[in-house]
Image 1 (cartoon, rainbow, N blue to C red):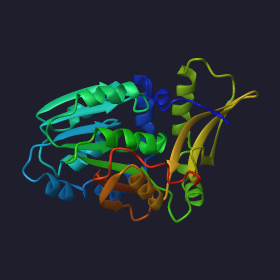
Image 2: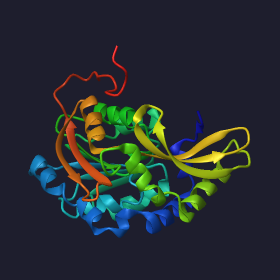
Image 3: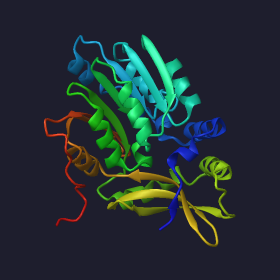
Image 4: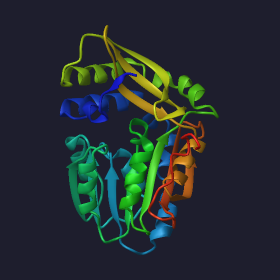
Length: 292
């Protein structure tokens, strides 16, 4: 099995943040399809109904420069406080400048790190909290991250997260149809720059893109960029592309309750608004693991 670089290695330096931004501007369907931009405005009515006239706080996890969060907040009252968190601190600061709130802060956070999540637990507001998680689940193991967020949430808190989907009923077939969104010159330039910065230094090699089963969930497809060298293969980048039914299995497994779902007409992206369910804090096993 290939060795995987941590997702944080792709965003950890300001220069990599700038290269990621170029990829986003040139390759992201979000910027080139108005339907996807409207998708991020739709949850506002349900969120307003949930919070009513209460003040609320916003925690923007993996916010990048806050583009998607800004679309949502245009339709919502201004949060009492904003905590912008991203692996790349310069992007988190940019998001904090862009997004409206009465009090703001920005911090670097690696969402795969228990230390980052412990830090987050110390910054939670007594107000009801809206947590956003946009564009993060494709690159991280979804169940552990969703479970960690669930443990932080109070009963009146909301989580609004996005998932990049595989169109159709088959995760693998759908992922193959959108592979050109990843295998292109701007993405290769970004990933090759990350490889050059990574320590310990990787051996000489070349990038190859493909679709593979996720190591933790065999029915889930991952688009991967692999660094192929004579003696070893490293997975440099991965993007999980679940079907919408797989995402909803994750929600049930992490003891959260779906309040609303918003799907892209082409089936390439979706948003889910969830809150903690009334189940105990213990979590069920992975719904895709073998039965005993």
